[in-house]
Amino acid sequence: QADTYNGKVKYTLVHPASADPGQHEIECEAGKICYSPNTSTSIGQMGKQSASGNASVMLWAPNFKRTGYGFAGWNTAYDYSGTTYGPNETITTPADTSTNGLSLYAVWVPSVGTLQNWNGCSGLTQGTITALTDNRDNDTYAVAKLANGKCWTIENLRLDNVPELSSDNTHNPSLPLNNSWYYRNSQTTLTTSNYLSSPTYPAQTAWCDTSFTASCFNQSMLAVNNTALFINNSSSNYSASSTVYSYGNYYNWYSATAGHGKYGSNYGSSFTAPGDICPAGWHLPTGKNTTSDFGTLYTVLGGTGSTSTSSTDPTGAVMSSRYRSYPNNFTYNGLTSGPSANFYSNSYGSYWSSSGSTSSAVFSLYFNNDYVDPALYDNTNTANKYYGYAVRCVAGV
Image 1 (spheres, helix red, strand yellow):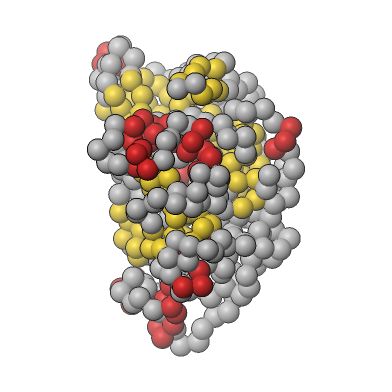
Image 2 (cartoon, helix red, strand yellow; image 1 turned 120 degrees about the vertical axis):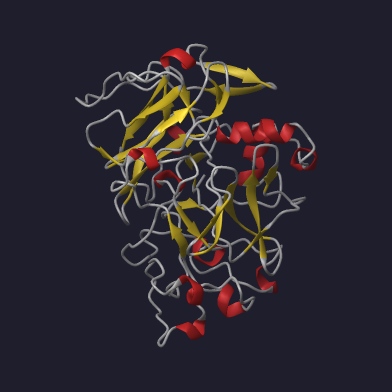
């Protein structure tokens, strides 16, 4: 089915239910939103979100994982026959939420192949969702053909400790990658592995955010690892501001571009990284202008350029909602500037492009509830290269 806004078409896909004995209707208590994994084969758990009837509420991002399946959103019916919402979409709750609660069910899409060198995008119609598996770590991602006619992963990249990157499994990596965001002088022996692995040194001595040197900016890798599911915590401890599975991992730009995006004037406004940590056949979205990947998506969602990036322009809130709505599914993943320093989770979305801006900054997609900075040439809030941002990948079309 489809509806329209501003002359654009927004598709809502109705998924068939899967044969799963764990898929069933649940009862929710009054004044709560209850999140169901909707399967007997997932791990992770979530608490209950307080909500009244006819209220504007931003849904929680999922903390569930299911091997071999991508997460496509929340549905109001366990058999996916209801309305599907994005993981951080803002909705108006039903009038009876105050008395009956609202049950939402995870929509799982089974993997149909591998992400590496996938060539199925041209055969999909707009709004179609499928799922594909990254053969580097066997993690599965939901994939959608969005309104700009390109296929995007609609979950944040979670690539962590994996076999070495190569041109067979990764988009033109620059090898080797230095191992972690450490100061160069904090390691007795520099590693030259092209593995991606989490920092193990104490955060206070290992992090680069206090040193604005080329050697610091050009270190690899992710900071806070958000792939740890809260399987040992009480579900009541879960909150929307927690570090949750679906927010993915954070990467500095050097790591996001697989060693291509360095710190220095040669990697500024005329530079587009020729490779990145997306799977082979996919790429980090381009930015910088209205014909880029982020630019065309922004335009087709209803963005109009610099006027919509103003914090005083009401269209900023509209655009933020559209990015977070199904099937786009961008999240308020926040950002990081250190291995234990996560900021703005549940209030800002932060995503890398492959396009440099200055010697130390990058065009990025950055949004909150009333502001959208769409990675365009008039971008006034570019991201420092040492920040940890999320990664989405676009099919090579």
